[in-house]
Amino acid sequence: MLVLFETPAGFALFKVLDEGKLDKVEDLWKEFTTSDSARKVVELKAFNKFENTSDALSAATLIIDSKPSKGLRKFLQKHCEGETLAVADSKLGNAIKEKLKIDCLHNSAVMELMRGLRNQLTELITGLGAQDLGPMSLGLSHSLSRYKLKFSPEKVDTMIIQAIGLLDDLDKELNTYAMRVREWYGWHFPELTKIVTDNIQYAKVVKTMGNRANAVNLDFSEILSDEELETQLKEAAVISMGTEVSDLDLLNIRELCDQVLALSEYRAQLYEYLRSRMNTIAPNLTALVGELVGARLIAHGGSLLNLAKQPGSTIQILGAEKALFRALKTKHSTPKYGLIYHASLIGKASQKHKGKISRSLAAKTALAIRYDALGDGEDNSIGTESRLKLETRLQVLEHKELGKSAGSTKGKPKIEVYEKDRKKGAGALTTPAKTYNPAADLVLGQSTEETPKKSELASKKRKHHEAETAPSAEPEEEAIQEDGDQEDRKKKKKKKKSKETEETPAVEADGEKKKKSKEAEEPAVAASEGEKKKKKKKTSDVDGEDGAMQTEASAKKDKKKKKKRHADDE
Image (cartoon, rainbow, N blue to C red; front, side):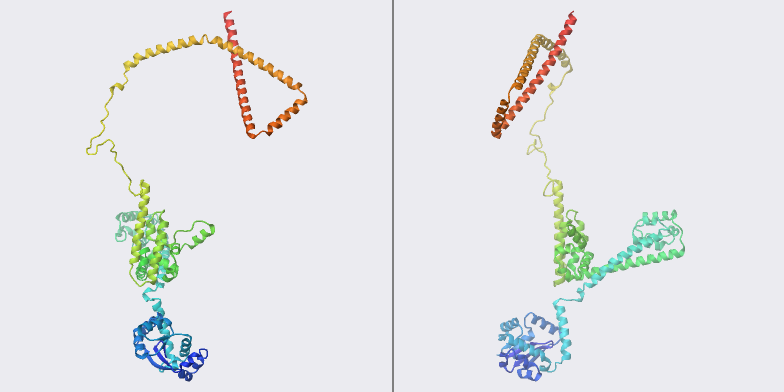
């Protein structure tokens, strides 16, 4: 039986001299305590040395994947004919058995034998010292780890993290220095601040001009593109309200302007460097969100690999952690975007659709980051395709909104042409045009003739009405007298009833109590009906009393009228 053993220097084949000792697995380690005892158990048969580190790396990677390399296959075919091969990996043994038709063995005894061989490896293999084996194993492990992580010096994202941090610091410093130049030179020429708004142009103008008295004789066409600004500057320099400054002060101001211009130039160079590194390391992320946003995402995540482990929902709110935890604490709505808000796609979207586009962009960004960090390709095809899809989605959302505002769902307002009265083939109308009706006009002569007729009819009606009202006055007086007699009778009846109630004994009171108890025992429906009847009676009595009052008042008026008539007759 042969044993296959992998070393950093190459593959070794050992022949087992006494296979009976493999049956005692517990006592096998005692045979490898010394080199002499180990030589009695195993013996080196053949050794296949690696030519260089690349050969060792390729063979080691294939062994890790349980695949025999080309050199190993040739080596085994040459030395393992008709022998059983003991291997440390069962999957590797299966692959060797399928391809080379060599019987392979893997059990606990083989693993214990491997431990003993590893302990006495330098003694069993001649020419392989411990001082050589250590550096070889270290170099192979480093190269293997680089290969497994797909490490490349071009894919170092720490440079991006440092570059974006320095770029942000330069922006702050530039802003501070530019404001200092404006404030310092503003004592001498305050009107220049409103004329030249750009900080870099302001520093260039101050550097070339110096004292404001020199502005009339200088040409600012290279600095200021607009001629109107140049004329305004020269006119303002003549009538400026600023104070006079010395040459030493102007010298220091110019040196500060030099610092501002140097920082701006270095910032431009740093931005170009950052853009080239981002296109190399994360081309798909750069195509999707841009260089600055992508670099800030990598810096916030720590590295490209750490960022690839994050889901899309985390990338969406990356940079808004304070707002997120504040919203969770106060039970308010969580933020919709973080650093990704500065991407151009979200800037194009309206305020309504920023949340939807940021969610879609975060999902696509997560895919692009994973492809950049773990994929083999170096193109930006996934990023450009995802960007096109997001742009079309944004257009669809915007057109839907336009369609709703226009009144139709498809985005185009429906305009219907009025063709109810037109023929299909021709442009003529199906119904004839209406003609003028002169009979509907009102003539002044007719109206003047009709007015006296109407007045005569009105006078006849008045006379007839007066004739009818004169005989009807007498029966009205008689009815009034009868009503007065009825009221007197009612009053007399009420007096009699009151006397009778006073004379009734206590027996009638007991009878009334019994009647009330019986009435209370009756169902609620009857009681409600009785109450309704009583209410109706009360309303009728009230109406009758009101009518009686009215009749009394009318009778009094008639009596007064009669007295007046008698007085007039006398």
